[in-house]
Image 1 (cartoon, one colour):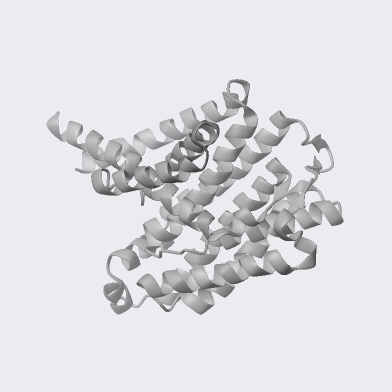
Image 2: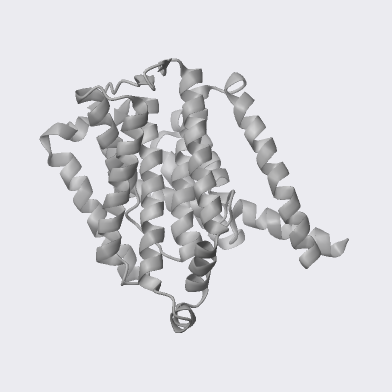
Length: 318
């Protein structure tokens, strides 16, 4: 067992290096805007997976962090002419602060009560985004300028914009990976597996959960702010509860509690939506629901989880 674990740990840097190389050449092979959408939702799903997959907290309000950061970034870029890096940073900080507020109110509850509190708070954010005069109401913020990165790089070029999105994704993914594989991450797993035992060992469970919630919210906000720059739009869609449900689907489909699963789930869902939207119209939501049901019934560990289990069985067989 330890030999297989050592082999897996040795293979991890190689896998990441290959994926990084593919990401560097991808915009010359695939439409950059499509890739940027995958990376934004991939980071969003990875941030959500940190909370659900490793801390065991099911939030139905993560769209609030994605959307609020997008609105903050869009307002700063449109009304104040800030540079893109300031817009993304401001959106990330705003989402982190909002996550702290959500966490303080919800973190001492668990299970369905925690989920419902986060959903209710997220709906309040949705209502504010709909009613406040500077958010654009149902039209959202349109025509958000991409600006110049550090005042130098023109992000109206899709290739330049792609590499910014790729850099943001890599940074967010690195933060999540280091969090998972740190002593803090091990405590989160212990809390997920057996909360009473973690309490008996002297850990302040509420504080650990709150910090995990804030990190997850901030990274979700980073994804939302970046997405606003990519599509030059901050809309109500990003703060709607449907988006919170969609990120749950991405995470479960890719593999809950796996490192790469949420990215694979985002790739699958975004690809299906882009391919099927023009062909089946509104029926795409029915197809997504059917896929989710099949995943829950037949592939409980998700795509990556099932592949990992298969690889372990093959290793045992050899």
